[in-house]
Length: 491
Image 1 (tube, rainbow, N blue to C red):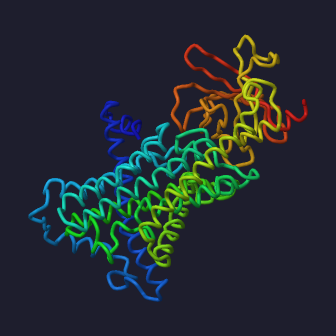
Image 2: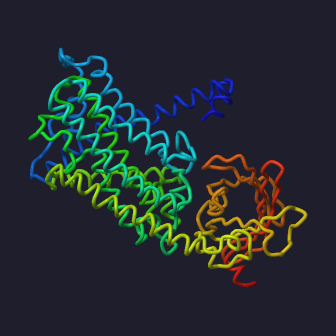
Image 3: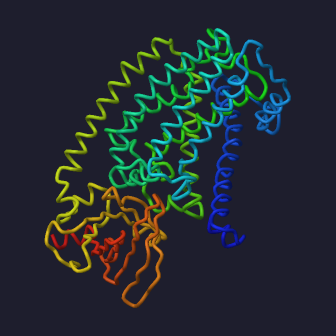
């Protein structure tokens, strides 16, 4: 988008970057606000259906405009500030809750390269931002200078600490398996994860229990039923929101539902393949005209599925007692998540890193390709050593490229080593009767390493023979890429 503003508007790079950033923020924030309005409507409709009621059905067709009518109503109401409250903090609290709920979406990928900030520590950023959400609740409870809101704030703080710990250990397991904190990297690591066809960590027997714990912890993190102890109406009137009215009350609602959608997105991204289709079948990547639109469709479909689960739980499961809430977090989820950290790290050490030197620089085998979900391996050496088969002198770069998929000549994925892992786009610059060559541009994450590829006319059953080129400062490497069938033939 920066290049678009530079080319079409003739702006400098600085102004183009600023405009592109603002446009990206609006492109995420405005649809998110619309999504929150419609999600509230969907929430009420799901509750009503499970209670054999109709739900909103008056304002607009099928009641679709009910959320907008409610928003207009609270906008026109008077903002009441308790006389004994700390007015400054009282007004800042809902703004903090709403703003923090939006900030986390900066690193959420909606498709290959479709992310506002594709940072290498995206998952750490989300963990840090989600931890800040409780500050709005604590500030509102304390500033209200009222008994029930203060009790609610204390509950929120204890609840956040209890479940953030187990969520942190669960995320460590995901990072260990994916080998990256980058959100797009975590998604691409799930492609063909199980049996070479199922996309998603959730189908992995070692990671499935972690997803179940993460889903339940997501309910607790967003204070949804059965963990909505912070606003238990039978005990605390309305909890931390008791003294709020008008738009300050609405900001709490908007922030709460934005957090709910975020947690649904995290469930989809971390365990269900994000914008990948459920199965690694070529037609499922492009059936909506383009790969980008299809990726957005799959992510939104998974988010809606998880939101239905959230609403289903709220409509059917009774609220926990507070001691049950604490026991589940500290005596069940914390020991279990710690156990899985040890189990998964031990499994990876025994299966993935058992012979790291041979894996990264020795003679590759078909079993090594399967271990990192790759289709070929390129043995990279200095140009003077190109073609040298002496073991231990190569840098093995494992890549995944589906030649059978439509437009498969456009993208490839480096799955190992971790410092090169990512998604790249191939742009052909030269062609002759014996093949062609071109550049490989980083889609995600953005790395400063220059990559290129040459493709020959020698065709194997799983793709043509190719050569990979790498330039990183003064380091220049090149090497032949060996497909599985070629490795088996010359084993």
